[in-house]
Image (cartoon, rainbow over all chains, first blue to last red; front, side, top):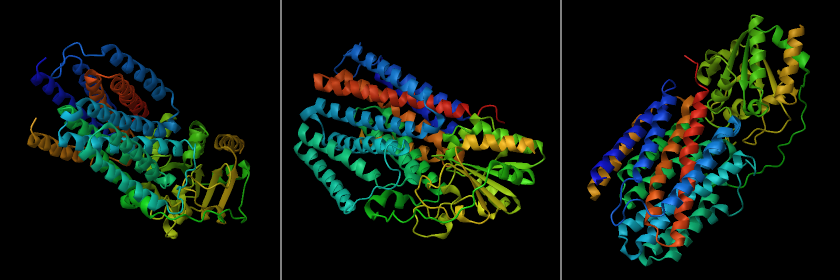
Length: 463
Length: 92
């Protein structure tokens, strides 16, 4: 195959990726967009097998190893993607992004070893960039995975002098980069990789739970840029196009997400440098709360005219999506006006809750976005908050300095009654106490969301 | 390829990347991120190229690892995105 045809096919795959991103931006075309992207990626992969780079011939060297590795990757990736619980999907995306970054760093290292002394300065600089950013993306994604999987604390991890350690690591990374560019050689590059891995860990550790999706999106954009840089070193137009597209769209997406969550992108990114150890003790207060029985809740609902359900991650963990729909259907059959108030980041990521409720066949027109539902809480008799906490926490409006301050919230406190279905008094993912729990108009129903809802449905049927 | 051509491609791709996602609703943030994530799995192409170049066992070992990781990224990424979007079907 000639170079011209090879590059034209690369361009075609690049166009597929543009159409994929375009399609993914609209609900109607999203699924088709994703498929177009998959087609583009498949074509791009297949064509490599039919083009001999300068100095090599077909079939490719190490063909057995290459095909075996692709088979192994498929055998790992597909079942992981198929079997993952929808609730655990964000951390899987983080993990996939991390291995992509790791792959880019490895590709850069191998090409560097291969080029040896023949590498041009520009190639070395791009290699250094790919190794640094790929490694940061890899180790950073592993930490976000562990945070989301709750293998480690979801609170910001800040240790005394931490910011100096982080700044020092960054300086070391830059210093070693210069070393690699001037001295060349394998050892400096490996030192660089290790320091970059360390920096990725230190960079993500101080990020609080609520900001994790933004960091995943950012690392995703980073990985895109490493792919573009690899494209330069490997002389592949396709990799440059695909990597740059992901880098650019990922940056915009990161900013949009940060806006939807009311977070400052700057604060999230440089939190690592400015974070101070927080006083986390003394928040476990021993104040009276009003807890009720499923019957109390059913009675309250039975005489309501309008009820808004605010689902959170706890609902998904308890797999209570179907039960909540049953409750909603029952209320509707009693003539009660029912809507769901969906916070942009309900669940663990923007749009996550829509996916979870769609899985339970909740009619789409009952799902109201935050801007639609907030003005209606004044006319709402009962707001039921199921397994959510941070997204209704008035602290985001009232207490400057708390980690979620500035995040737009669902203003359930404007409703006449608020019911919280919670497992315990434990604070939410962001680790902040919620004043609303102690409000006199709030009733708490403790227990697993699914079990509680089932009892409420039973009690409401009996009325 | 000369530097100007590469810079041109890069610059145009940046603008296209900005443009295509600038009006996405928050409902689609997660699938879009996941889809973009799958797209950068084409680093698989780079991994295959370096595996072809590899002359030492060290290089080949690293390249094969890169292929495995990139395949997980690409194939897994598209499959999980499709699963997310499957949930949206049947809605007008």
